[in-house]
Image (tube, rainbow, N blue to C red; front, top):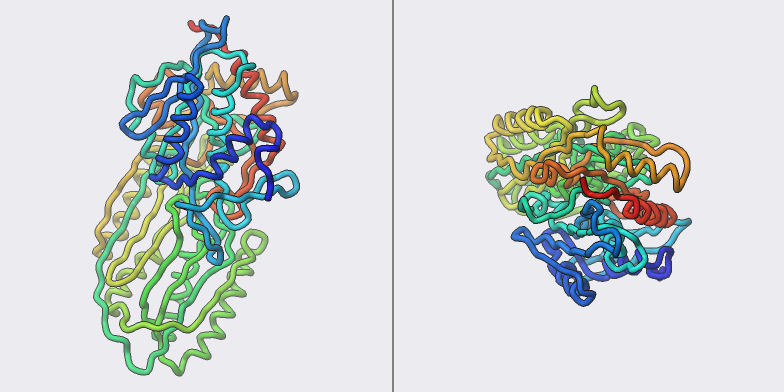
Length: 485
């Protein structure tokens, strides 16, 4: 097992080791939050819990830096909890056990939690340090970011004292972010009638496996497969020819992750099973051809199953047709920011069982009107299918400020410390900066971070060398923060 705390810089990695030991699923961060509150108070640091459950830790300025602008270091405590289907891991009890491979720290069969554990670890290292010159520092450690940004939504105006905010939740070293997408969840529910199993039918469990998955914002433009959409396509393609009747469906596990796996239990006339197996092999080959170079590891699997009833035929047409037609992927590229997705949707979760359907669709856009338009279209589609629809968790985007003094400072220090040009980007993902900025409109904000790949999917990894660079840059920026106006 890799000894994380021995990696350099040890003052950062020792904290990430702790984060790997304490489970922190979204909405269940209290064990970690309580630990960090106690940790800070033992060091004489002031702490505050707000009504949303966010933890604020304050550290005074080092002598001689009392007149510098205050800095808020912001990261979220929770992580996306994903594991491969053949991996037994209880995210509420089991620690994360990463390994070091070719300069990357990786969790092979689960998510790593570098998103956003590395950001938390960097903030804690600043709080613990006694050799970094800085003005007043606050660490804002939010909860529930990955499941709806509940912590940032509930953050109260007036709590934060700093003029500058550094969000440490982006995943490309050398790039600085000054804008992000907003978003909204569309949750769909419906009831359906269960009928008796038709005579002379066999039951199979069909599945899509082997997809890479990934972040539903940062990776949505890569053309990776969506197991839910692929399995719905398979069922709709073969539905009439094989008289398929749906028993149940279970696809995806998180609203903000691309669905890697999906399974459906179906019934069909027993005398058609052999022919169906041949068609499944053909469909697998088709998917591998279509996803060549992107997700060609996709597999179509099946096994015998059992069931007593099936979805009523009329309900099957109504509900599967709507799901099959539901949008997924890039809707529109930005006309203002070259190469950046403007509007997208992720069909992240579909569950059909015991007479009830649930589906989650996560809409993102750089434009509030884009979020509104696509969410409206999704609502219209499922309204035709007589579904109950709820729109939840809407959050604003973060409008870019190209005149940001904090951005200029980051780029200046980067050029001095590392040489070369840094990048300035807008991200098609939801950062908490948008919500925080709506409550602290005068706060100057920049987001940056180390190289992280595969966030929100098993195999997530973080580049160790880039963490060291982020740490060096963060220290240098804190020392260079100007005096208060």
